[in-house]
Image (cartoon, rainbow, N blue to C red; front, side):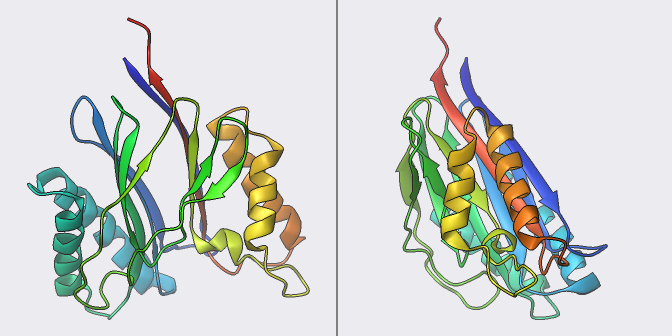
Length: 223
């Protein structure tokens, strides 16, 4: 049995939101993990969010090619149905639980953060490309290989761009510090980061949706 422990938190800034995430099992070894943010506000963004999540799941379950081909197909379908010219940032990945090998496509989204076995927080810099629904683009599939015990944390910009009463941004440094504070589990990392953002805001209204997705790769269980 191969194991991946994860946790997630999504909090909309208003009564409707534009963030979403999904986890999709493709087969016994491979799962899809994605996190996304519609570049718009209000009801139109929320409706496009729901459409984008449904299309993402549909494309990933039926796409015959690799991840780069799936991303291009998803962009094509989103552009056809995006009526209001809304954009969509997304981090889209397939993880092989038998090896820890992961492929990601980054469409204008925040880079993933790797938590090493000794507790360091490292940004996985990606070439990426523009958000979906802007243009046709050859988004590359980029590889990350997780070692047993390592974790990845995926966020939307509602984390780094959260503002306090002085209109300061939470930023990357505070994000890393919050992830160092408690790495006992995926749930603890999500709670630590979410709590740090809300404490930093100090009662100021959230300026954007906040989504955090964390998972730790535990490798293969003993037979």
